Image (cartoon, rainbow, N blue to C red; front, side):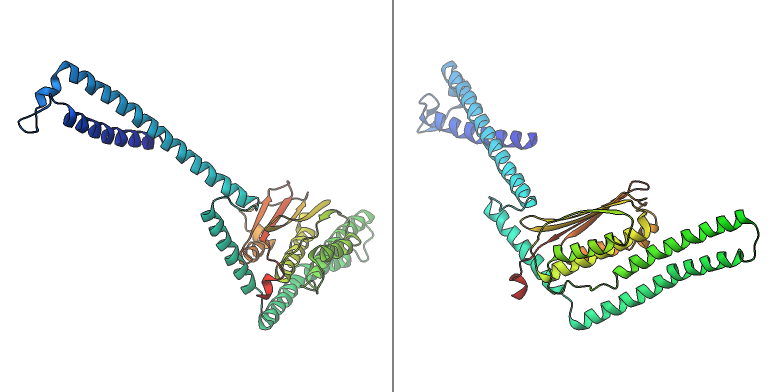
Length: 331
């Protein structure tokens, strides 16, 4: 910025002083002779030197004013640009028409991406088949092995007369069975309808929360605004909420779960937070949560998914997706 001020000042000073000195020499009789030829010795007359110094001062002063005005204008333009960016962030219309045009172009592209992300019938069948395979693998890798382990433990105490050993092994079996039960409840979320079947997102989430509240011990606190978007966006957000809650039930060991759904002029924001054990995102375990798929799904919808977590500090998932009105989806 300082370099810009100096450059503007120097350029303005050189132009102004050169122009002023040329005009002074042209109109000053003591400088010209022999038919208009310039006599530099005339410049050295004390009276002319005083005038030249005055020209220097005036040129410098005017150049300083020009550079300051230019600097102030640049500051104003930058501030207006920053304000427009801030208005975009809070989903207001930018003041600068060029920024507003770019913002409109981005919104149009986002809507097109979201329309293209609406899967066809064939793609839906593939998605359902992949879900079935995944549930089958998880049933085998988690629930089946936990039930087998509990069976083996209970078999080992059969006929035993050591009450202390029987008690400890029974408690261990109960713990394993409890974990298997949580796994089953989490997996059952994947067997729910992927789509809302004409219901609004807030109504669908309310039904899901009521169902979970009756089956799990964790406290669920929620605030769901009545958001409005295209069916594609709401169906995807509903599916993503199921995915997050499924992972929370399976891995977080949380006592409290907070769910928030809200909207502004452009975005729908879904937030799910828990006070569970959290995890280290740099470890491969984070991938086992299945949360990496959320980022890809949000990206396909033109949004993003932020996952904030740390060991023993819970997990917060915020999904922010640009919304598209219902009539846009019918274009």
